[in-house]
Structure formats: C-alpha cells, structure tokens
Length: 132
Image 1 (cartoon, helix red, strand yellow):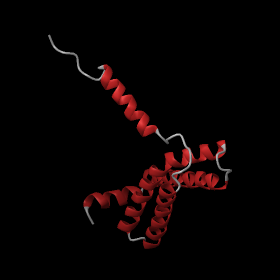
Image 2 (cartoon, helix red, strand yellow):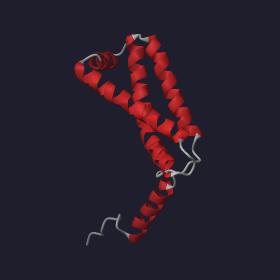
Image 3 (cartoon, rainbow, N blue to C red):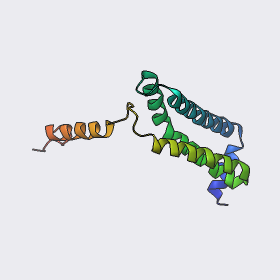
Image 4 (spheres, one colour):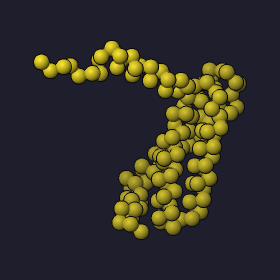
C-alpha cells in the first residue's frame, strides 16, 4: 500500500475522518432520496423539476464520495463494503446517464454559458487593453 493511501486510511479512522465520511454518505443518501422523489412524481410537474435539478446537482459529488469511500474500503480490506459501495456508485451513475430527457435547471446551461463567453469576448471585455 502506498504511503499516501495508508495516510488516507488512517485519517478515515480518526474522528474528523469519520465526520467527513458521514457527511459524504449523507450527501449520497440525499441524492438518492431526490432520485426517488423524481421517480414517483408526476411528469412535467414542478416537484419533479426540483427533484431532478437537485439530483443532477448532487449526482457528481455523490459519485466522487462513493469512489473515495470504495478506495478507502479496498485499502483497508473491507470487501463487503467495497461491494456495497460499488453497487451504490453504479446505481447513481446509471440513473444519472439514463434519465436525461427530463427538464431541469442545468438543461441548456452549457450552450448559454458558451453564448455568454462569446458575447463577452466579442465585446472586448475579456481582452486586455493595449499598452501605449
């Protein structure tokens, strides 16, 4: 085991490490709860829009938290926890990739951000002033 990974496992066993891992697991549970609300809500309703936006916002941090947790569990040899963590991580990834047709706040934000950057660059506000 590498010294960095060993230090991470030791930190995860300490009180601050337990607190951080608990907060991360809470984030994952909240993400999955919003996914459940999204699944049982009426299509095209405000409740589903809010739940889908929250799920989309929390999905990537949840995946990263689970990946780190699985890495720590593998380093410490807790193979049951590795299996459970991988299952949860794959479930979140599956739900994140396969339910993309829903309306949410993030939909179209990439295009809007690109348009905003192009407009800012065209107006010259991003360009440094010429030195005299």
